[in-house]
Image (cartoon, rainbow, N blue to C red):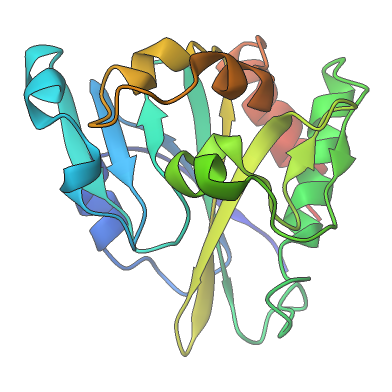
Length: 215
């Protein structure tokens, strides 16, 4: 089975809300502007809506779980993948179902010089902070460095016919930017800073490495 590779420029809210083809496809996603994205169980009361407006940051929601993701324009690589239920990569066990994608990212990162990276296989970790901010927690299949900081975030949603995996690497991590958008001003910036390792590799280079690593 081969992959269809699509480079798409999207409205974040519409792209998260929409359904994608059931075919085996990689979507390399570009989203103009900056957006803060809420997880499926989160509401806008977690955000300082006025602060978002003042900074020109759009607000969107996604149908996959997890915490808030801040998309600072041109500071991330966002790749979604779709496989059908009859794809050889499909795994019924949700906990194990993202390992293959974590392994793809691990191989891609190592090929661009990020050697210290591991596919996480423990229990969901991160506590209250991880529930609030996506990159502050870590779950099975995601990729971490030697200190446990997250390199790659992965979320998933399933339908009767296919699974959609949403994955992201941050090229830059400045946690005060996301804290400034939160309704709770007491979130610990220093704790957030230690949760994430940015990957300062050119987007085109890392995208090519990812595609090369696909099974």
